[in-house]
Image 1 (cartoon, rainbow, N blue to C red):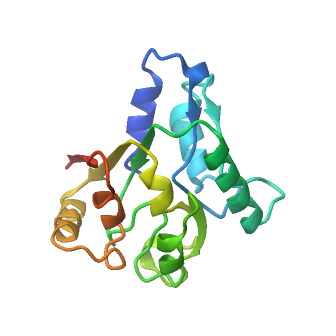
Image 2 (cartoon, rainbow, N blue to C red):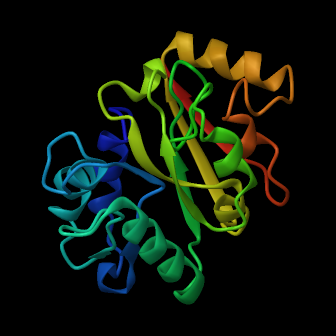
Length: 192
């Protein structure tokens, strides 16, 4: 989500890969129609899939389904499909990643979930803007992904990352979930 990854997605889509063998999913999604221009599905479609149409897209939000059904479907897909090999993460100015927002009442539940995905209500969290209801990858879901990239743009986000690196409370800076995952280190790509 956000604005940082669009140019990366577009550049990636122009690489000479066998896109028909690639499945693209989401780390998180706002509780919006996939056709809504504020959805992450729309961002991926506009910046990536229009340039690599042979890739298969697996949305988190399904038209006609309620939030719990969409989370259930996402968890079934994540546990029965080929494991994801790459997660592209961003970070908000509040230190959130995916839809793991500091201060969200559902954050402890999402952090403790053994399932790959959880719903989260981020009402009152500034980073969630006008879309508080979310589906998000959990730490358990992230742990199974061997390559994790964090894309950051701007000095303010670099400062937030530095603050997150100085401690370990994931409730304060949920980006610490990605920083503290076992296995290969998180790869951070920053530009000003």
